[in-house]
Length: 85
Image (cartoon, rainbow, N blue to C red; front, side, top):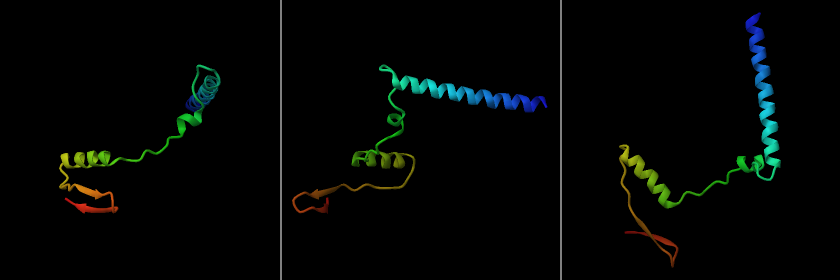
């Protein structure tokens, strides 16, 4: 019986703590010097990966032992076609 009482008391304390933290967070978002609204922290705009980022990731794979080679491709900007070098 004591174990059940302790578990329920711990659950109740956790619920009270979460409610208090939620209220504190909300109050901080309403003050001028406080936090920004929660939607600011939750929404993240996806960032496009640049060719340099992609190459850096592939080089990391290569450094870890992945067998791969890289070929530089130059684009012909006037015609919109690619040509190998």
